[in-house]
Image (tube, rainbow, N blue to C red):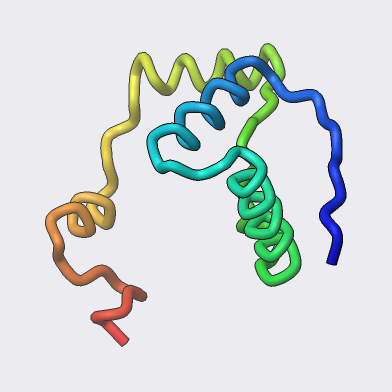
Length: 97
């Protein structure tokens, strides 16, 4: 099968990440991009849409304010979260079934 070349505009930050990864792992950029596209397309085919997390999130001004407020003053963790982080069995978790 003959290879086909595609052209796409990407951000400078993404370009730098691709170049750093390719250099660090000794792979060609074209190979890296093809593997990444195949991986992503397979995930889109096989996983429910609600669990595929986009690499970029767009927030409104209002939602950003909410996030900033929670970061500045986080809520206290629930007992279930404290138990989970302590390694204890959590109701509904794999150990409790």
